[in-house]
Image: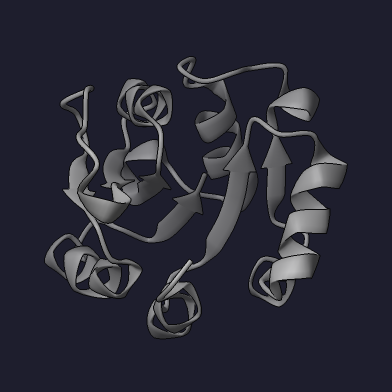
Length: 134
């Protein structure tokens, strides 16, 4: 995904992955893509938590495990159910919508280029202390 490495380098917030995928698949995808060093062990899976999007449990668990309140977190998502889960968890949501795709769930702040994310986060930085990538 273009711009992801630059975005990860430019954001100075703690980050984690919170995914509905199985833990092994998440870790393998991070290894193959070269993104694993950015997250370390800060990876959370619905399979381990027992909560699937659009339920807020996965994001709430990730925030708590990282030591943050939900209102201190922002979720970067690419799915409507993920945006719904972020909002239900009490978190600010940014929805990645590549290639001019349309958004059917009108919840999060849409953006279409990962390199835009640091600027978007800067507008909310007074409250944001943690980024959850889903």
